[in-house]
Length: 514
Image (tube, rainbow, N blue to C red; front, side):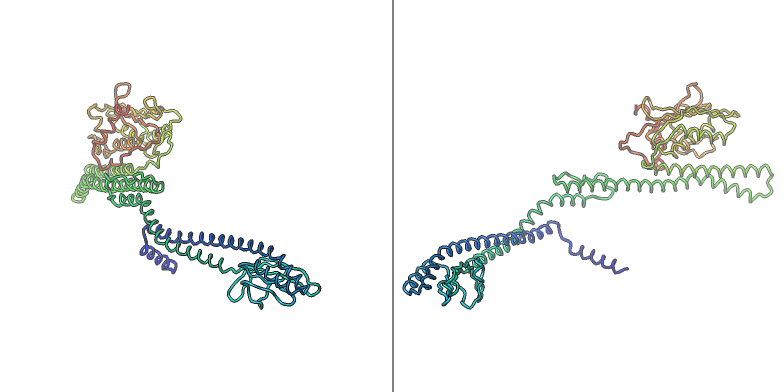
């Protein structure tokens, strides 16, 4: 075992061990996703609120600085003129107008300040940066706006700086963040419970489908439908798919049972039918071994009997194999077949085997049907072979006419018939000729030739009829092959396992299908 294979096996075992229900998975996913969404949305809201509060604070700070600038310039002029009383008046007016903000007027002789502001040793931006900017010192922060006040007659420049602490804004932001965290914490159990309820409701139809599927018993012909419309598209698709799979399984299981039944019937039939010929051959061999001084005539008779028994066993095995193959035939093997071409080929081979026989074929150039090429050729070979054996009087050569026409009772399809000049078949015995192992007293075959014809005709959903030729003497076996229309049709696969009642039913189909 490779390391990759071992790792895959471990992963599979862990998955089986820690597998959980779909509703639980959905509940856990919701319990994780909803708080994350709350936190993400809260983060956006906190950012938007902080930006909005800061913008309002900056706007207020600019307005306050613009209002304080004239008083600051008046203070600068009083200082420049060295009028002490005017300086105090201007300073008091400036500081009174500051209200809740910090004010600092930077003069060459030292700053004038009042209100909340950073320490004097904190470096501040140059005067040309009017702000607003944030100044940090000692773990605190202020928003600052700068207004240049001009020069003081060669003594330097004066600057107005207005400060406002950011503590209130930061406190509001921290409070909002805590509320978001609290909401997210409460959202975890609430969303998990809500997700579990919703998932349980949503998967109710899936659980019902699982119960119906679990209740199915193998080979239960009366099982309930596994697919019941639920209104949920995905569950309905799964139900239909499962029903289709079960139908295919049933069909395959039925075909497997038919194959096993066919194999058992084949073995039982071979055991039953070969026991007689083998016993006769063993008797002949015992006679040859016990009486080595038999006359040439007696020895020739025994050898002829052995040869006939051997040929009968070969014929029986070949016929049973063809019958079993017919039981295992599948519609997927059907193809377009020219019946007229098959009739000419079968007649040609029959003439080679029986050059003394008169075999005439009346068939157009092209008569197409959907069927099994080997099966239709078997039908023609067996009908011709049966006519060659039974279709003539003692000492007379066989005379056979083979006909192929297009159309079945005015519809599309094919009609095939084989006429012979034999004694004919009484009407009360015409159904019995299709039974298994139905042999005449002088028949060299195994009694399965016409049974194979009936089987192949049934596989093609056709009909086989035994009658009399138009001349009034002999036998006509007529096969009617319809055109396949594409609809689902039942094909029987139990010719080797069932008795003659099925064969008789196939040959009585003429009036019922019309």
